[in-house]
Structure formats: structure tokens, C-alpha cells
Length: 180
Length: 166
Image (cartoon, rainbow over all chains, first blue to last red; front, side, top):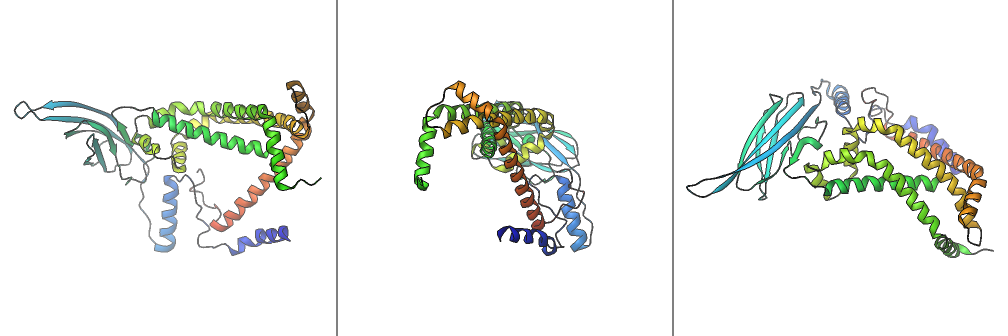
């Protein structure tokens, strides 16, 4: 009886599916066009108004460099960090965050009116990293990997990432081997 | 002779341990294939993670969202290495089927096999093993298709064009 039951479910399922959401399909890797489509669908169906979702943007931190300054009068040492950022795509403002090596963060807002900009930060400790749009406010950013730059590079994350991909492939191959 | 569930498991473990070289061969083969598939990704991984804050974030744990983001950002790379992935996968599947015949022979006979006997039995069993594997794969594909279709009915068919390329 089980196969017959399964066949019945298969045949009758379309009649029970909700017409309201039949045009909306979940996606594992949604792109901007998917969100725009959902927003348009929902707004036109339920709100009756068009949406104004702009196209894609790609923020990037292009370079980070710093130098040390010492006030000869007070003897206080500060670090001046220069961060170059760029934007491709639609004009959009974003927060630029500098993280010095003292656990604190310094935020400034870039209006995003030009495609390239340079910022200067002054901090009591040497910088660790700079990150644009750290809170992920721009949902239309097409590349999140270039949103930040660290002063020094590390091979540990690369090793961990590569190892995780390797494990994933091994798992897939072992599964395929189990089936075959 | 009915040996029961525990007996079957014990027998299986015993035979696997006796044929440990085959298990090693299987593991090494799997590892080499996985490394071959991973190597083209290393340069872009270095670019994306070596100086990015994302690198520090994945150190606390890799989630599937990162895989999705990585594939999405580097889709042109994956498009370009797709023929290589397909070729390596095809070689893997053919060798897997070939060795499957040898494994079958090694696990069903009582004595130990040398390399020559293993390869001979693998060659002899290749066609039957290929037939069984093909039927297996077809049945699995059908089950997957039916499952996806049922899931589609639950969530809704992809009838609109605006997400067609995802």
C-alpha cells in the first residue's frame, strides 16, 4: 500500500498547494534579482505599490597602510591609518570601520558619492583591519570577501577553508562510492 | 545459516579488517580525487580569506552560507573548471565501479586475495557491477526527482523568470 499512497500524494499535491505563494521559490544562494523579484511580487500582490530596489553594488577596501607619529612635547605615540575604499555599481552610503589593536573600533560614514575615496584614522594602537559596511546593511553587495582588509595576512583561514572544501569533496565522493 | 544482526556486523568488521589494504586503497583514492578537485580553488581561497575579516570569521566555524557566498562570488571560476570537475568525477566513477567488482570478490571469498587476483576479479565483475551501479543510480535519481517535485509542491513551483539563472 505504501507505493500507492506515495503515488496518490504525488498526484494530488498540486491541488493542495497554496496558490498565494506558488510563484515564490526558496533559493539557497539568492542573488539581488531574486530579492527584487520577491519584493515586486509581494508589493504588487499585497501592497499594490511598486518597489524601488536598486541594482547591485560592490564595496571594497583596496588598501590599508599606517605610520606612527610621536608628539615630542607630550611623548604620546599615535598611529595614523590610511584606508582606500572603492565602490562599483549604484551610489550608496556605507559605514567604514577601523579596528585598532586595542579591542576598540572607530566608525566613520562614507557617503559613497564618488567611486574611490581615502580616509584617515588616528588611533592609539596600530590598526588590525578596516571593514566597509561591517553590519551588512547593504543587502545588494555582490562580494562580501573584499569588504575588509587586514594589515597582515594569515594562512590559517586559507588552510581551514581549503580543508573544509576538501572534506566536503571527500564526503561527496564517499557518498557516491557508497551508492556505486 | 542465520547469524543474526550482531553476527553480520561482526563478520563485516572482521572481513574489513582482514582486507585493510583495500580500505586504505579506497581512502587514498578518495583523498587523491578530492585533492585534485580542491587544488584549483586554492588561489581564490587565498585571495578571499588571507587578508579578509571573513577569514577570521570562518576560524570560529564554517557554515554552509560561506560555501554559497564563495560559489556565488567565484561563479566564473567554477564555470571554467566545470569540465575538469566532470572529467575527474567520470574517472572516479569508472574506477569506483571497477574496484567495486574487486571489493565484491574480496569480501565474498574466505581466503585472502593478492593484487593479481583482485584485478582479475575486478575486470571479470566490471560489467555486472556497472549494470548494478547504473540501476542504483537511476533509482536514486528517480527518488531525488520525486522528492524535489514533492518539495516543489510544498513551497511552490519556480514559474517566474526573474530568478531563472540562480
